[in-house]
Amino acid sequence: MTNRITKLITSNQYHLWTDALHARALARQSDNEWDRGAYVRWAVNTAWTVFEVVCEDVTGASGLGNRFKDNLNEALADGGYPVIKWGEGIWQRVANLYEERKRYTHRGITDADLFPELSVAENAISVIRKAIINIHNHVSKEPPDWAYDDADYGLIESGAKLFSPSIHLTHMNAKEFPHEDSIRIVIVSQGKETETDVFPPGASYQARIEELIKGSNVPMTAIKVYQGDTLIEEYDVRIRGS
Image 1 (cartoon, one colour):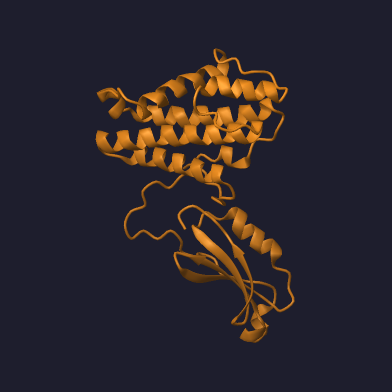
Image 2: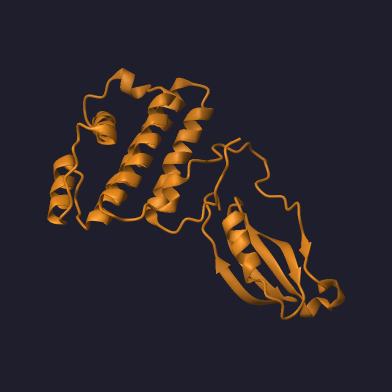
């Protein structure tokens, strides 16, 4: 089973990247060529959009879309960085994907382009991920953590539960205190609040908050901290699916 990392979406780039991963997941699940073709083209186009936005961010340039390869090299040169050699290594694969993507977005699309194989989406995600990492390295910047995310639920069956708390933790001697004194941690998912932890008054709970955010795949929108029934803290959380 593929390991999933938390979809804590903190940037527009990551939001779009999860779109591309979702499109690929739907293409994998499609049982007919019509749906698969639509999802494959979506994955290719969205992945490429992510790459363009990332390139604009790392170079400080804008409007790289038209004549993309030339414009990106000009932006790199203006910033004092070596230009990209588009006929070598990963950049040759990026150039090939660029041409493939243009076939999906401009006139003259063929029947074959309307029904691409799943491998086209798989290749697009793989190539763009490597390109995002490489363009950051090219300008001596750290690649974003989200570029390594490769998982998506795809289509969840109707009625399936995204979250069912299997563990409810009562920390230290919290049971000994009245309800109105206890610190309660609650997650908000699909509009419902679910209590996950109870601490005694005055206890430190920040590590548990961080654990819930970093280690959860639950599509939650918030984490709330109550003392008894009084809300004392709230953390906004953006996880895909919420």
